Length: 122
Image (cartoon, rainbow, N blue to C red; front, side, top):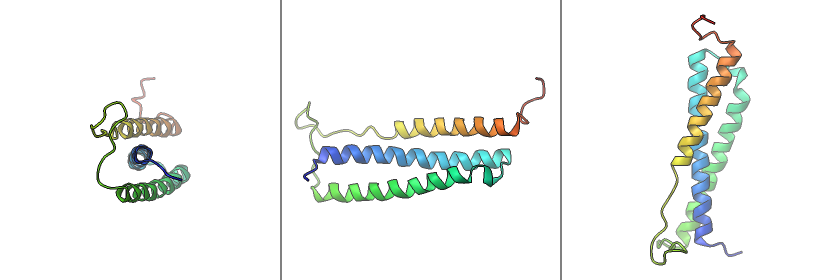
């Protein structure tokens, strides 16, 4: 099967965004668990799954970069603008995913603690 450079670059951007989001999730999960004193057994399965996914996406990113490099150094022009190289949109998606993951982890940890971090004025 002959896969186009555009397809490979799109997959690469997608996988890099997922990889960045997973790394942010792991960092935030560990930070919030430490901050709230959460026992590892409460989040160990989520951490294991996220670390496994980091390994998968990391190897896929490396594979895609190798495939793209075999195709040559010239970027493929965008279909709507001949002669102009494609621009990357990565980064924003990973940031959003990381922030959302951190917020969800913090909410989950706080609800497990039963609101012990609140001021008690409830």
